[in-house]
Length: 346
Image (cartoon, rainbow, N blue to C red):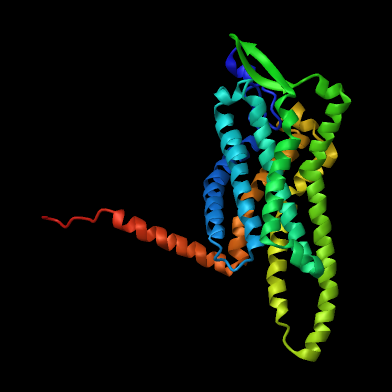
């Protein structure tokens, strides 16, 4: 049994090797899309985190904390999921990352980074919901200190609740005394505790945060409609509404970030309802509708890790200006390093 046959049975969620079957169109799509995501998304998130961290975009400290944390979490997702898993492990399936000793930790890291990124988006949505719809709670909750506490707590919870991933796998196959791949223990499919853990993972990522974001956006829209009716009456009596512009900026930022998340995660959520986690562990025919739907959903899910940079650029004027300043500064550094062309005869 050669190494490629061994690794074709490498049991990793959402990881399917195509050596034993005909090439499917979805594989060509992935081979083109994921390198583009890595080339664009990783530098974009690094730049976004650096610009936001400087605090010169005219945003409150609390919002800035969330946006920096989201940029860093998206960067981690792109590195762990796209660069390492979808590119490096795809083209080098016999690398050290496929060893049984590393496989569970690799899966654990992927789940933790994705969970942290998703729940950060939910927390940002809730923070903006409180800011827009709950004026009494806003002064106490929408602060820099609360934002830091929430971010650190989310990271700790993401690390803690997926600890069983480190012990739920056993080696898949042994070749020449080397253990390759990993698969869930038999107890995972028959034990009540493991079934509870499986459902917890499935609901926590992505179903529950997806529903919570939808809920808070719906409540925010309802509040905005009611508030606008009151504001139109006040504007007719008192003239210009000075607070409306600040509320508009906050609403635009909220709906673009959470709206992009909902749009790009819809396929994953619908696929979860239809198949739960079966596709993740059973693999399947690369041309089957269930496999294609799952793969497209995963691709769009990873695209969402690049979306926030584009959103900030489109909606935040000061962010665009900071990006221009960064490129101008970089150009001023690079130009003196370029050797001057010598004139003929010199």
